[in-house]
Image (tube, rainbow, N blue to C red; front, side, top):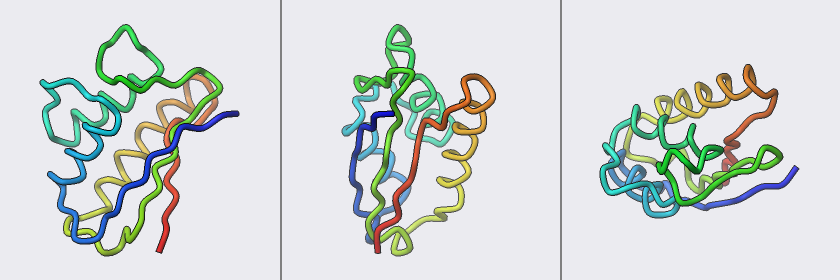
Length: 107
């Protein structure tokens, strides 16, 4: 399996800041809703280029690693972000048997 990686520094990062970084790094469209549901939609579509919800695409044998520096220093409830990633992975595991998004927590 292959991976694509992005790194985000969560130090004092708020929810809006996180969504903005993900939008920029992954090429979400201008109409990206800047909310958790929109994040689920865009991350879930990374294997479907025809959806037009991301400029970064994953082949069936690829996954996305999000390197999360200073994760515990974030300025929002990170458990919701963890829930988003878990939801995406559970859906992906049930359809094709592979996780799509992996989090690497870096102190």
